[in-house]
Length: 335
Image (cartoon, rainbow, N blue to C red):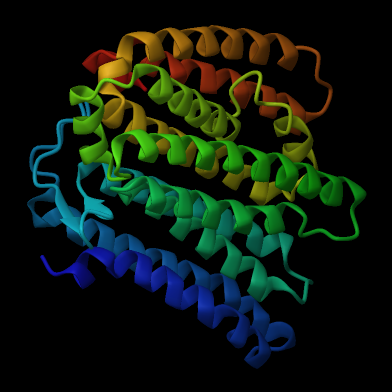
């Protein structure tokens, strides 16, 4: 398969995201009601192309129970990998974005900055799909940042609301801090292994003898991604951001961004860090127990629907983290 076939879903999203602001200048007044349809068209075309890739024998031996990947193909020197894992998560991200755009049509009926709103949703979806298809830690980080920067703006989209502005600022500050910690962890892993390719990194960690420095790097990766998936004690931004963000964007964060964080965790800690599963499993086990317990107890005391759902989302993150703590095929299938 040619590289442009594999990259076609992302290219379509990028083109539609670039076209949306210009289209907003052409469609004035009542005609701006066509903008959600244009955004939906981009997502549906991207979804069709993703399903087409899945039909090219890419999912023929789909082993979600054990993440056994048959028919995986690497592109751009291993920077991007198309396999059952990336296609499955890409379809999930596209489905979430389609529902968010449909809900946003009512939220943005009388707003003039709708083109930028839909453009940012498309860019956030592209970033999530990059994380799912990343074969290199640098591409994974770039995907996280593309999705993060887009959602920072979307959270604060209601500029007249103090809650929305406060939520955007908190999300940006904590998101930037978590990204810095994660990037530091990536630099440590690169320093000891000499590569950021996920598969090559796994081989280097198995054959090398540098446990202490690798563990520091992996812990920093867990901290950085812990903020993304809202694991306790890295959850403090979630209730305020979910409450202050526009309703459709809260859904995007809960159903899209969180899955992106888990996709990154699965890629890193089920492939690269396989040699350190025992130590890492204990860390994830502690995080999972604390996260599911705190999230459920805190949800009981909430009188705001969004905050209650935020703590429920935190608790669900703990359930999924159990898969990484246990590490068996059945556990991973459940996760």
